Length: 127
Image (cartoon, rainbow, N blue to C red; front, side, top):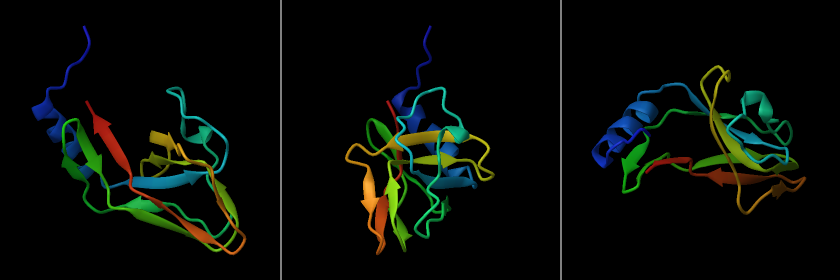
């Protein structure tokens, strides 16, 4: 039998998972990789150029909708030099566990040598 989470439980689950965690980190990856279920943190090569730094997710997530979705406020990665970005991934605070990843459907994003930015609104959905 498959697990069923009723609509009323989806909101509560996302609230506990996302707003109960105080150690989520958003990263960008720079390799041509499509996320798969067997992935681990080391499946992703984090961007290492252009003044990039990962971002700790500390604001509250907004939980809403049907299907139920958790959305984080938009995050901006500002680059001082060139980089190529294929997608993002989220880890726990010490970067030992991959929580989820997404490849950009309209990427990769090529940041020029003069720099630029990548803006992301992290989301996760239960249905």
